[in-house]
Length: 299
Image (cartoon, rainbow, N blue to C red; front, side, top):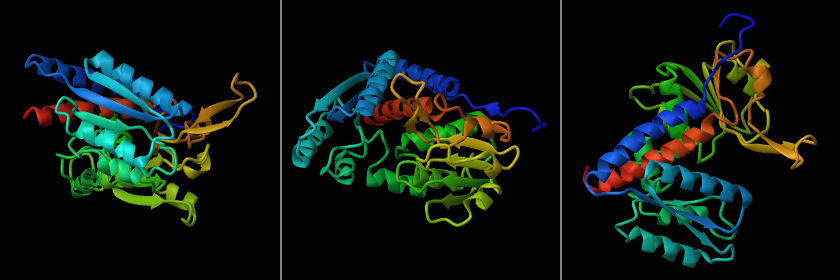
């Protein structure tokens, strides 16, 4: 990248819109057979972020012609009652996808709940069966939506991954681990060399400076600085962090894990935040829902 030029902006809204258009065509094709994909969102309690996220998913589904239902359950619901609710949906053939919005109130175990969802309806990709299929490179499973969205950003932006040095900041089950599982596969648009960094890693800056691609998913506001990025590297910011901001009506604002204004002057390509990974996550959820419907319909 020439000196003095800002990075290519990897616009998740544009890329996600293309995926939604492709998904809409599939919905229309199913409609010609009298089939409508359906998804149920389960929200427990009134966590403000969860309310917003589920509403966005519901609205996007409606625009595509996917039948979406949101079940809002009391925050004091027992784990056993929630399991029973999910099991009823598992046995309902008119429901193709089930998503339980995290976080769940304590003492409910997210692991137990995610494992209760029928893996054939697990459009979030968190059931152990789908996690295993992801590790094995089995395309019949459902990939977690955020890592799948990041992968699509790389593919659709023509960012080469074969042989690339990829640093993943964060080892979580939602992004870090599945992201590594996707990119390490012996398959097109994969074949990367993966380094996963976390809170116990030594000399994080030195590792990052070797990377052709950095995927930041640590949950640490503005963690990745310009002096940690090799000139021309691709930077994907998955982080969502709320920080104080006296100029905001709410007294705070959302920022990513990347110091965007500084890093964009060094990187070759970078996602904005917001407007980068977020729209891709929702797009991949819709894609997974239609895939679940197609499988159920024998397509």
